Image 1: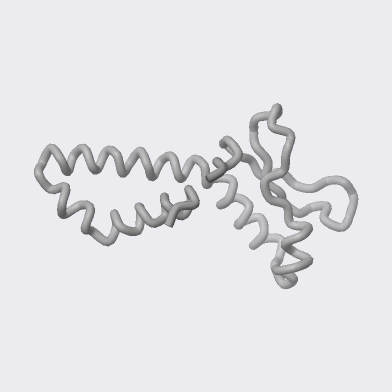
Image 2 (image 1 turned 45 degrees about the vertical axis):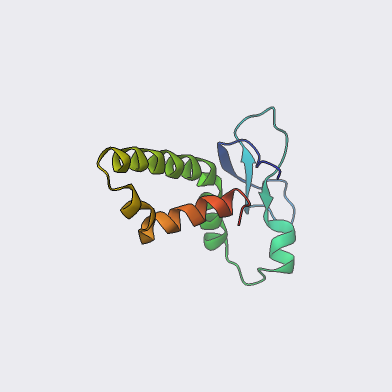
Length: 113
């Protein structure tokens, strides 16, 4: 399984003067990684014909935050597991709906089932 582009990512606004000027795209903050992670052009034409600029920007902000959100969730889960083990509540933790959703989210982000 391939790894995602190293974060953090940032939201930029297309400013080429073309059809998508003013629309957001996502790129790594590391200037040495010369790539675009997500751009509206293909998605808007094909899938999101009714997607407005505000919703597109909100989606871009959420996507740009995803590397940090994944790391924060994994760190939080590790801390919770350590506390649960030290207090003999680990079995209850891993059976809880919140833990199950968190594991599912991490697995989804990492391309696992």
